[in-house]
Length: 590
Image (cartoon, rainbow, N blue to C red; front, top):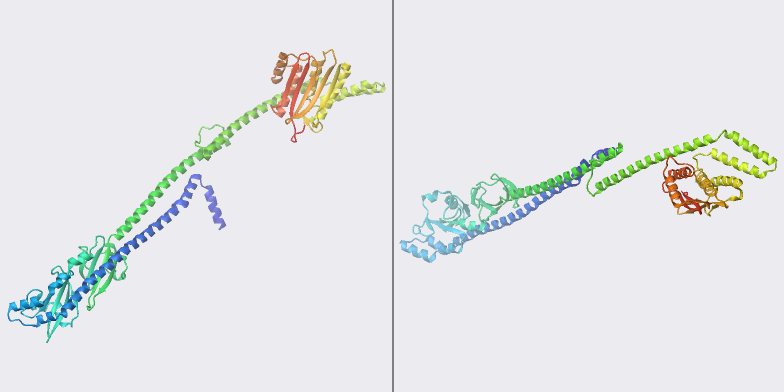
């Protein structure tokens, strides 16, 4: 099972975005909608069928009751005629003259009232062998009547009611036949016709059809012309409940059961059909299916269009990212819009701009490094040119120091020692950072030598502020010596009075500030501005003070950033200040 899920997950993960969204739409929308739609169609068919069945059931019950009442009415009327003593007397009396029979008929016969009172009665006929009665409802039994089947059956019966339908007479296809015993072997036969017009009035319905069969084989009434006169084979399966069945070449909703009338061996089959039920069910089902298919088709087209547009935008973004990955920063195609993809493309464009700026910065950095290396090579070349056998020079200075010490000349020995340490440090200088304390010691050695040279004309002060950790802070080597050297050579050397060199160190706003100031001759504003420009831009004619400041400034910017470097302030006759700014360490201490 785990392998199956793993394979399925790999398959989904390997699909492209468009097919993946379409598959999700099929599984999450189309399939549930199809299942729900089919269930809805089936349930709708069931509900409609139940509604139509209820109507058919109600109509069938009404038809059954109406026909049963009409047939029972004929039976009751026949029973009343059978036990009518006046009519019996009329039938058994022999009349010598015809006018006597008319007179007796007028006084005793009430069959006319029955026809008026009961609309279900189409006619009443009484067949007798009394020769005096041959008018009105009375008819003579002739040879044709004696040979008919209905008369023979009635003559042989003992008053059992029979129903016949062998031709239409006086708006009646169904008639009741009953024997009337008169005594002494004599009898009459009454025939009562059921009115077709009244049946049509009671049983007809515009939407439903009704058929009535006698003894299961003779159609005696149908509200639909041209119907198959034979009973459907499946009518017994109804059992009084509506069923869908095939009849007369049509799918119909049919409800059928038998109706038996008292005192009669005959049976009637009443059938109620709804020919519109099946077409209505199919029409409703097709309408729902068409609506479902239109809905799914519309949504599918919209989803396909949406996924196609989304896939195109993703393809553009993917191609651009592949182009960037291959090293090309050229963007020819764009992804419009303010959605996530549009914002992602905008972020990618901003990233490209940042990359371009970084590439330019790296290029400028590499160019600056190359310039710094060139400057370093130039410094190393000058140092190399200035050193004539360093070991010989160090040994000579050490010998002079020892000789001075032996001669009790401590001042010369001290200065020679300072000079040796200064030269050793200068000749061993590299790009490796040094402790700030070592750089300050180098300045002290240099200023001590200058004091020996100029005597009381020069003094100095090195003033680190509280919180500046000179033992742990590391800086580039030989950053301060050129500044101090410029202060002595260009600021104090021509000054007649005592000159002071002051080195101040303090931390402020995340930076280490070092200011080298003197109270020498200073510079005017134009000279100071020219020196500042030369310090920022390398020129071929740089020399002396300018090249020293330029090298220090460029080394600081290349190592720490363009926000750091040198600033010069000077006034003619008042002195010069050169301020150097460096970053603090991670703890915010110098």
